[in-house]
Length: 122
Image (cartoon, rainbow, N blue to C red; front, side, top):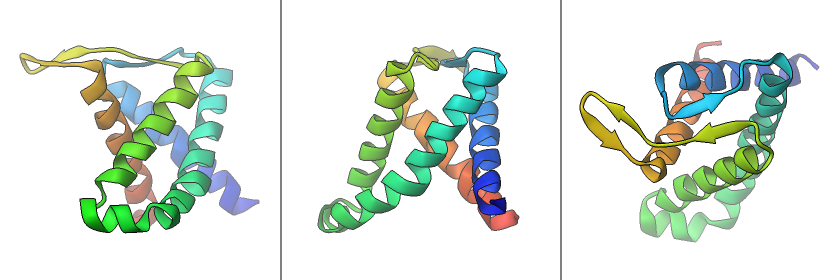
């Protein structure tokens, strides 16, 4: 039970911190929305991503891990936007226009990085 709660907490923090720094990643400020999005992110990160690493192992070797990043980004985007929990749009960061496709990769990278850092620290 403690492990499940920790994974949900890490997913919650990753979503919150990502929505804080990335103005193109919008989550409604409701506790139920954050809880649902955290639960889905935890399921994606702790169940689907490890399975995809096993399935796509040969392609990941050839592409140096790009297939895994691409797959994770697409799964995260489609699940969270189809459930109307988040909105992903383009935004301007330090006078650079970041389109929504690049923003999807930034969001998935940020969430993954934050979860991995929290797992290493705690």
